[in-house]
Amino acid sequence: MFVDLREAAAAERGLRCFLSRDEIERAARFQSEGARSRFVLTRAWLRVILARCLDATPERISFSFGTNGKPALAEEWRHRELSFNVSHSENYALIGLTTGRAIGVDIEQVRPMPDFAEIASGYFSEDEKRAIEALPEPDRLRGFFRCWTRKEAFMKATGDGMAIALDGFSVSLDDDADAGIAIEDSRVPHGGAWSVAGLSLVSECEAAVAWEGAAARVSAWRQPVEL
Image 1: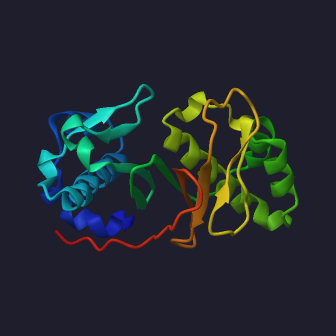
Image 2 (image 1 turned 135 degrees about the vertical axis):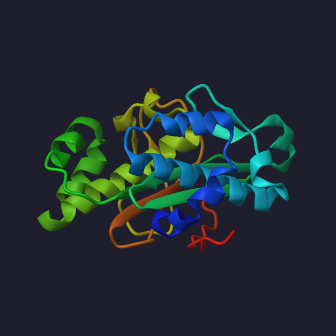
Image 3 (image 1 turned 180 degrees about the vertical axis):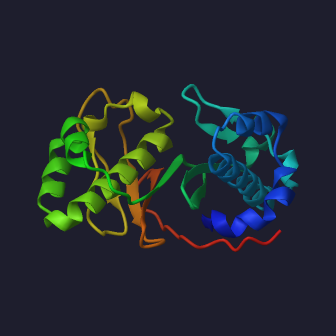
């Protein structure tokens, strides 16, 4: 589910009342007004979407957190087997929802990054580096972000985040609807089947969703900001 945070900004005052005290305190720690607003909008809109799925009110939704900080629904909601994940980048937020399996999402606005080749060389797998280098030079920056979002979505889906060795698994840069993730290193603790798909949302972004299990149907839509 894709949300344009610029559209949501007009509803920020109404959305803020859905946040918990902890979320309000976390928002206050942001130095930038823009970053603070984006956090508030993303967290509040997540609550709105989850409340609609759970037939609850947004302020009633409560969360628990894994060892590495991955959020999940609190125990009282576990019987619904609803999993979610959230990412935001500048003007956009992405909320992933599924049932009965782990999920991770990532969205990044494509922006100038002079050292992207050095980052890829130091952290990506050999297959990923070759795939980026095989692209025409003008396309390599976008290829980097495509690779990064797919890797980040997988790391978030597992719940291990940056504890996973970045070069220990490979994702495809192809436009396939979905593709398996090749886990090549014992430092990546999650074996079994994992899948990842790129999402075409807006031209200035790369985005991806990863989930536990084999190929599955993936739907992406833009959520109008209506309370």
